[in-house]
Length: 228
Image (cartoon, rainbow, N blue to C red; front, side):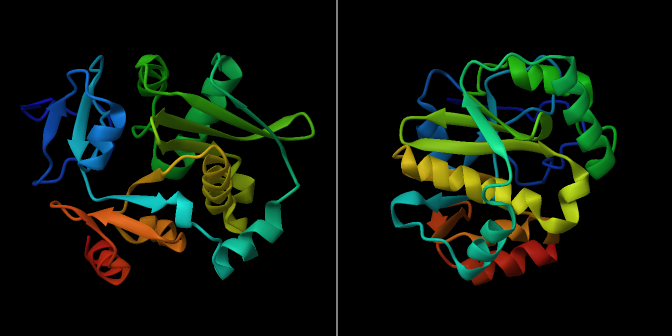
């Protein structure tokens, strides 16, 4: 990998922090980059193989056990949906419309316009897509990046009618459980910046990248996030 200048941001991705470092992947295994605190960058048009340093979080799956909050959320949604987990997903118009509508309503139209989502789907990093359905109606999509012994919950999109019921938290829990069954060691949850990201601290054991290594002090993580 090599360090590069900060690329121009074309989309509202909320990652342009003063201490962010950008690198270009030069064939390194994905797990090696993630283990050094890097996550894939998707904020620039037509730019692949770029990763950025971040306050990311991961769950150590061999030791993962559901917390009381996890069990509460599980009771609300377990068994409600069918799901298809595939590495051969082909996006169609229904997929793009569902996902861009979700992002526009939840994060604003500039966060995930169709151009950015198309770039994500063709960048070569999306290993698995899980489609959740209620009867024949799509309820959610989850995109994962997976390497040797690691997986990353990169993006999720869901029917916002379920938002107040914490469907987003359940989707992450369900993917964590499935990854543990597949024998994955580390499950990456993305960044933990701001109050809205604190739901990721509901999983144990949790580690977060503090700029120098993986830190298990979740209380400090919560304090930092509330100050963002």
